[in-house]
Length: 126
Image (cartoon, rainbow, N blue to C red):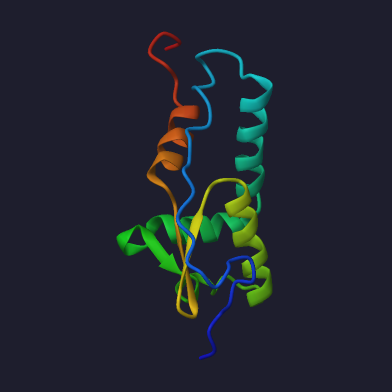
């Protein structure tokens, strides 16, 4: 099997970017313009079924990270997989690290927590 290369990751392993929580719960207060842009970017990235499958594959993978070689069977070509992974990274949903020939992706726990809180009804609103 040929290695799947991700052209968006340099040969030098990249340290995961710090991921800041997105936004307050929707019921807490209206979003600022910046918060709305951030949330929209995240939801837009997850609005594509292939991206959602890739994100889910990474999030549910044992150890909290997945090699691109383990998640690329989503019914599209390898270059398309790389494109979708790039979009998920640009939205701040994934980080990646190159290890030799392979690229490993992970979902930062703060991203899942922030997305969950975003859609949670605060006790005051309940």
